[in-house]
Image (cartoon, rainbow, N blue to C red; front, side, top):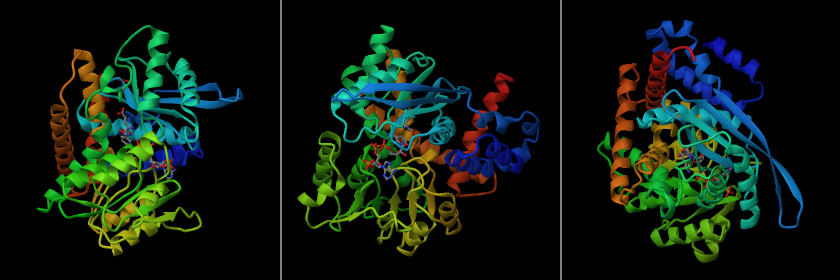
Length: 449
Ligand code: NDP
Ligand code: 2IT
């Protein structure tokens, strides 16, 4: 096992986030390999951590002043053992191969946990959509898709949104794919329900994370009602996490973006959340503008000289990190615990750093890893694919009912796998083991390919 880490450190030097994601899974699945020593000779782990295919391409585009820019586009097709490649796109200046390999790797196990037939992939670009006009974003999306369209398809690889890629970008990407291929198909998910999307897809990741948290609390005969919650981010996942928490009687105190966070002691209610949605999704503004409207709240600017994030240093019951990777470090973990936190549920991918995870597990907190807790998003993408194949649309109630059932089943699967391998209540071990076992079984069935 140590050899595998040594191997990828030498083979992929500098891919810090990818190493972090791989190490976590390898440590969790050790007992599975002890039970199945044959997996070693078959190099199952080595095969799982090597992407089936990586596509990298130039994305030239012209801004509104006529200046040409060049970005880099990627699609990491990690595994197709359970179905066609499936996973989101991220447009953010920090995007690089390490980040997309970590996300594609996580996606393989996440998608396995949904029980739907989907392989794992992730793509994106180091393009910064913030501050760009709609026309600039459209030209970028068209250039990106003019290349990506050669590599994807409804039976091959089905991308979706993610950080920096929302309904607007999915529309432009779909339009270009359709024009290039002369084909109206379910090649992307997260489409508008007006032209082939599923109801509840925008809500699914956040709602699913709250359903998962409710399942965890249920094991201790508790509910979301009355729970004081810290939520980070102000994008898709954060908005719908907050929405479902409020609906179930929780009190949401915080939201954030990369510039800072707001703390509203009264709680962010339905009306205030509607303001945030307009601010972020239509006006494309900053979360700091919340206090212009609600002056009783406080805004704290992000301060990179601090070795902790003050958002996580408030008294609360539950924490929902919904922004990005590694947003809760060791110090934040201690701050959360000292402030009485009982549950940490990852809406984002890998938001809790490894040492912070250890602290939560050592303190017997209810801690849910993203690959289980935020799987509702990709699960409803799978339901969108199913609806596209049938050329029909289920009602919002029907999709929400299926989402709830899927989250219930993922929760149970994690608990069962953890208990089976001697770590009862450890959702991290449970998610990694259950996802890995499904992928490993399919790989054995399909031979050395
Ligand atoms: P959005 O782009 O809608 O929102 C992202 C939010 O996080 C924004 O508030 C953004 O602030 C903030 N953020 C992004 N990068 C950073 C950073 N480096 N530092 C601080 N804040 C940052 O993305 P989503 O809500 O879709 O995604 C959030 C997380 O959830 C990601 O980890 C994503 O991979 C994961 N996820 C998303 C799913 C989905 O269905 N959308 C499904 C499963 C997981 P700012 O505006 O300042 O950049
Ligand atoms: O991280 C994720 O699971 C997503 N961004 C959603 C992927 C998808 O294909 O729905």
